[in-house]
Amino acid sequence: MPDSSSAAGDERQPVIELRGVEKHYQMGSVLVKALRGVDLKIFPGDYISILGPSGGGKSTMLNILGCLDQPSVGTYLLNGTDVSNLSDDDLSQVRGKELGFIFQSYNLIQQLSVVENIEVPLYYQGVSEKESREIAVELATKVGLGKRLDHRPTELSGGQQQRVAIARALSNDPAVILADEATGNLDSKSGGDILEIFDQLNADGKTLVMITHDEGMADRTPRVIRLKDGEIAFDSYTGN
Image 1: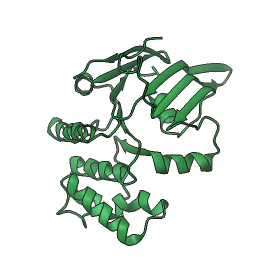
Image 2: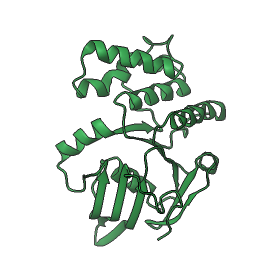
Image 3: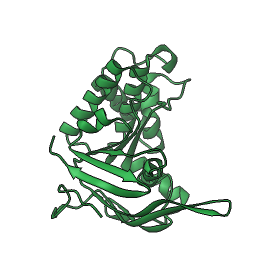
Image 4: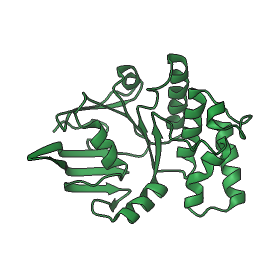
């Protein structure tokens, strides 16, 4: 199995580690192996693109890494904790504490304002209303929406909605941010602006994993992982 030079010999504690992970789906009488014996280490501060053809395993990998699904075989360690066989309730708690998600379709609540959308994860973490509002305003300002706190998603452009989604993903100070085709619905200018935010977040020390089919996105990340037929075909640290 190809191994990244960023991981080889690294004695740091990985924030994510997959050991022999497989994911199987039963499609009628056919057993589909979406992931096949994946070994992977992601370290704090990594900035990674995961690419691959349709059906190559990207979506399944995202679901496993995001604790949205569980391996059929193998072990998943998140910040040193084995989350491979947790209950749905426990997985939900892990997602809320350890992970931030940014989706292609933004997944904002249309009835809520910018600041209220950012506050949603904090509500589920039991953060006080006062502290939640302070965090949300700070993050909205950080992504350039400080003057649009009371706007609703329908009053924002696609790029602005994705900025809200980024701020929401940051609200719980996650160990890892997972971005799924985050610029897929945006024009090139707005998409470039979002990628610049990602670059800055990583420069600030955030761990980012981007699921993408866009080679241009992959060109800007120091580490690129390519999936093919459910296996890691290529894992390279370029140092960009």
